[in-house]
Length: 444
Image (tube, rainbow, N blue to C red):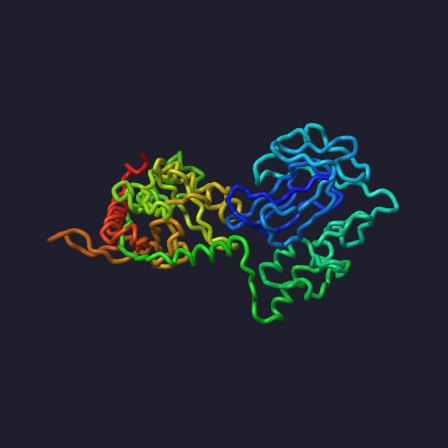
């Protein structure tokens, strides 16, 4: 019998929430088959199996918050062939005899454990033979079924208390997710589905009847709560500038017609990102952090550029490593790859760590500008407002006139311990200059 403990998926976290199980008791799994999906403080992560065998027991229920290192599932060896653990996985002694089952293919058991987020392989449900096997009642084949004689796990007894007999609510994983998002306790919902199952409509109806809506602080939203609170402990200041970005808008239209940008979504955000990286070369303090242990200011050599993304699970700020080394085309590709992953909750753990400077674009919501809170641990964050057509004074002397121009409000919130007003103002001035006259030199 092999016991799989909740690992840290590379983010240095202490806990995660169980979102959904992809297997049930009695399923035959191979190495690298996806066992479950968890939500960490940064993203959704699929966990593959380090063992081949038969699922004997599921130890943690959906919606439960589990500490890293806690056992979450037990997998029994298949008959006649020991389960092959992935590289560096512990080898446990076999437990009690178990039901004969189809052995996992040899090539599958010898495979190495892939990185998190791998696509699930085939998971086959073994045939349940013999009178001592538990049958699957109609309408309940979405729930794990415990073989007779197997000790009931906390997730199967509803609450996990010793001797508990209450049956948990019957609801499929998508319905449980709706309940979690709406703050509805499934044990209070009257089921109307087949076999006494709870449907999504049942959950929505229950949410509408309970009055106040309660949303548990979990995963990404809980991490956002913590980091924003910590960030506000830092003295922050914000400076603003209105920028004539007419030339940038014209550049974007030019780039859209270039063959190398075909299929890419390009917007002024990309040019702003490049402009910020160029401006940081002159004002490196913008791309700094404070090392409290050594009482030192760290000026980072590379710009790990964070792009704030609003997602259904909360605010995420994944970052593009060494963005300052990318030309405009490569930077466009990187943003095109990163933002959709953030919205889907599939950002790799590495992309959520070690950011040095961030950009947030409130203009996409039709907002003129704002004073964002810095991403915790960084020295500054730049905010872009919506681009509006405004009357603008151009020319000098006899050529001075008012013409319609594309204008954007740009703000910079900075750690006033690391960045003073002069530095922040010079940075905004450099960004403004580049955005007013970007030229095609930004491609290189």
